[in-house]
Length: 363
Image (tube, rainbow, N blue to C red):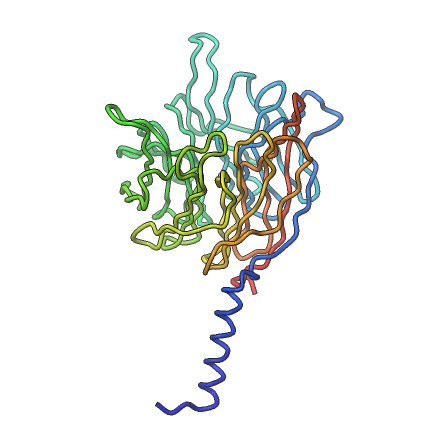
């Protein structure tokens, strides 16, 4: 084969690109902590934020809990606004937004008459909530994709957004504690559950728009806490391999390549596990750690499409337990929002921070 100067230039450029990716310098950036609680409204002082969804960098929605019950929080580009949600005994579990005027939250609604709870999905239109699914079973997970489709799953049921309403599909849905959808024809869900006659098991499934398919695990001891998909052929799953309490587990990361899960390595410290992940493309994902120890401070890890490495640490108030519970990064962007909580003795406070990074797909 004859090597012309153009071919040599192409080879050198390709090798340089590979070296750049392998160097671990693709996903770098800086964190900036942002305030959440409203000093003028102490009754909504947040003690924990659990889930966040950001359709744009100027709008995010988060759910959490406060001293007086569940809360709904919205980010408008420069600050968070916080309002109480429902009744004190209601339990918010997930949030997913299509736009700043269309979000869905899943929660358990307390019924004072029966002293029980009913699964609900409510829709946010930019100013108020309206019921979307009423009196269902528990629906702990909801995910909306960029094409405007949404899937809500839990307790054997699957609800699909069709136009203005959710429609119950006649399929047996798996348990789901976290879920990520990229289109109406592909989602991936993860859950740790118990099956009669067995110990705790991990359930990972894909959704093709009409039915669920179980996915084989690379490790039977893997316990995934979150999943993020950038395409139907690329997802990252993070969690713990082994017992995560108290700081005894190890981090587990697996990549979905379109047909199977592949185990990956991540340079976490002993006892550290991963509890949240967000991917903007196959070249860039950011994950948050949690080690469940009495002196827990958050770290972040990132992948550049070749390997995982330690990213700049997110801000922490300096309490004896700081944790980021969720993170959402914008596809094709250089922006993320992470949310969580902090505890110092008996004092609680919220955590929220933005992260600006470099994603090759955005260049």
